[in-house]
Image 1: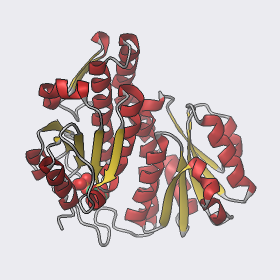
Image 2 (image 1 turned 180 degrees about the horizontal axis):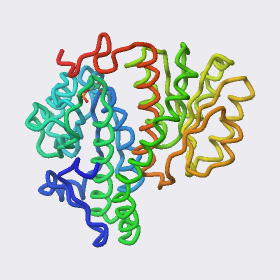
Image 3 (image 1 turned 90 degrees about the vertical axis):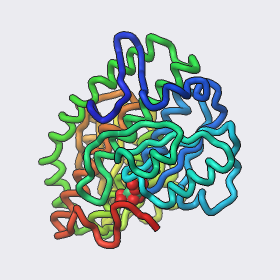
Image 4 (image 1 turned 180 degrees about the vertical axis):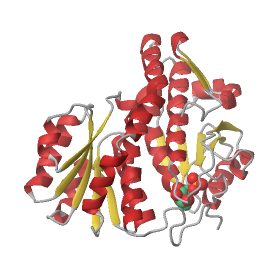
Length: 346
Ligand code: F1P
């Protein structure tokens, strides 16, 4: 994360600098709507971006699957800012969505990992995430880097529009600067996650639940499990559970909760109780030192306490590790999952 961006942050001065978008400051100040287009993991990063941009910069955001957007007749105007996110920069659906938005006169920002790829070349401006090469097909560190880019973008837009106070911005940037250290700490959950993976490696289904910006984390946890271990998994906003998925819960259904100590903590606890009452097994990602969820869940994975804005950067890691260990235990090739291509170019 520390090295992933050209963008720099100066916590003491309360400054965010995003090299690739500087010339578009006026556009960002006056933008009425942002549309984010992406596929797969990049789409989940976009959902985190929606949460952050709306929360801090107060600009309405729509997040669209590029694979759907390109085939419908979306309303786009020259006033719109379209952010296209892609690890490879070669995903055909995302490229087609950009072409469509460009035809209607929108400004395009790209968030891409591969320098010189097609998507940055199609974009007016943007940031390279510099996460290094994704060796495997399934995106992992690219997600962390995309979310970092979107976090900086949200604070940058908020700063330009004056929707965040300087003292709050300094507070957040100081905390963001500490995230690489907290990520290193989070990676130390690996051995404990491996033990949990062993208990659930023979599952046929799994649910992932989270609220707020942890909802896209739940989606991403489910996607990683599907992609590399071929276990059927679904991610839902925790509050949606009662509108359908609750019917699936029994003693054969592991449910992974993102239950960190943030604004929705109490509500997530009541969702955990609902799952327990139906015999479901609970694995919970919790904030360090949590005792309440520890007493309720079958297994907890502790991550460092952080502001809600940064939870996705940490909480995703144990979920990636969980999928990785389960896949290895099931004998799956984690680098080259069946039927998946590194960049989907058709
Ligand atoms: C999008 C994506 C990845 C997924 C797989 C197929 O790629 O859906 O998220 O892991 O590799 O493609 P990209 O546009 O981010 O390169």
